Image (cartoon, rainbow over all chains, first blue to last red; front, side):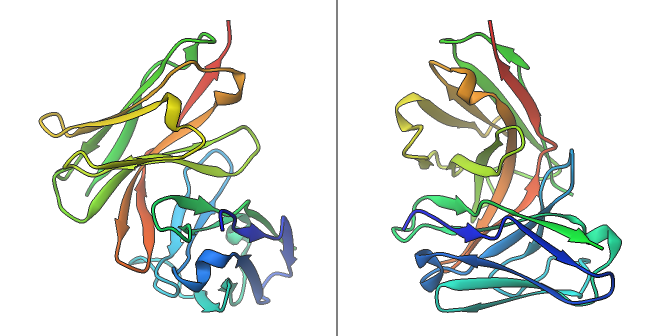
Length: 108
Length: 122
């Protein structure tokens, strides 16, 4: 498959938990990575290898995977978490890198 | 601390070649296990992997761009470069360079340049 599908927009109340999902056939074979992008900035790696956080990144961010779906969960969302979130993985052949279309997270 | 910085013209005329360079500082581009990637983002849109290269010179290109694309690496300068020929307005985007890390089951872009806006216009 050559696609990763994300919901275009998700909202969460301040302090609540939100899950952002990413669906694609390649996720049955490869773990997803997740990126946070704020306006005018480069993306920032949030989660890699399904559920690993880069050093220093808040532990309210976690990742999981089941079948063809990967998820990014923010437990206790903060105002600064408002951003676009992108998932990424290899395609099913293993050469090309795919990105999902992105999910715009609004913290209410 | 490794940092990446894109450089190149911000304006390119249609049908010409878009050329960008990414300079790697704070670490060697020759470090094994990493791949050096170009990613672009059309205005208001999502991310698209253009292609990547290892320091050995082995590379992979996005199939949709392959016929117009060349990615090269200059280990002596700790740089890698992008050349995209026959550009059109559809190539107008922010271009990022990024360092890729991977294993057999995952990839991650752990370090990104700040991005450079390239506009294709006469």
